[in-house]
Image (tube, rainbow, N blue to C red; front, side, top):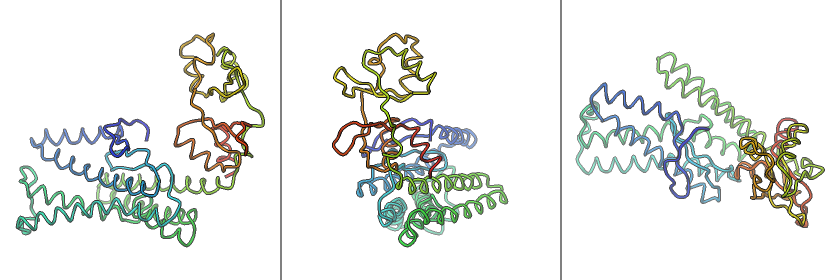
Length: 356
């Protein structure tokens, strides 16, 4: 999901375009020039409006269960609402998964109502205008789009909405980890059928969609299984045995030398009284080297925003916190709120790679 631009923020949720969206814009421009018609512009714009409303349906329903959404990203093959975490209960995930298709069902119902009230002749549905459509043709196209989005998203191919519905239902009996594995394998089998169908009919976009679903199913299967195992690992077992620290007046030369010789790239910065004032991560070290003036004090480059976690918490909590706040270092407090250690991103990677 790297390489995005934010085009707006609605309900405090950023809406972003993936860089690959430029490929769709190029395709639309090609059709405009080839057909000498801007009709496709309206159709594609309405399609993605429906996709955006679909994803905000997921996001706003998730918010009701106190699950925030990082952002919504649009790509040529659709959109994705990136939740900060999975809902705690399978029933909540079920409702969130159904909220998106429900938006499309509502839009389809409204469009159908308008067509009925305007006395639309359904005999013309087989051959609606494409090059020079009138208003009712757009309504029919909109109805088709929303019915298609509703039906397609309910295909039980994890991680699509239908797959999430399947996972949530299975989780009621088998638990989330096993339910994810079952739903993931069902999704991968369906994805392979998509690929085969697309290649056989030379519908390469359909085949590409199947490939995308196959890969994403694997990613989500792995992530959920790892998260389930991180629940049983404790911060106390992975935080450093000693605090790595610098003082506000230390030169960045000392920091860079320790990074080169000892591989120490995470540390806290202490003030004159010995209290945490900031932290050093690879970001600060890279920024200092870019400026090429390492005689400046650590206080110039440190990140003054500190992040804390309790020593009794699970590694899953630590991982989710780091993901949510995009930070690579957590300061570890004991039961009395006293700073006793630190937990960096590398420790989380070790927990995932070696012990999960």
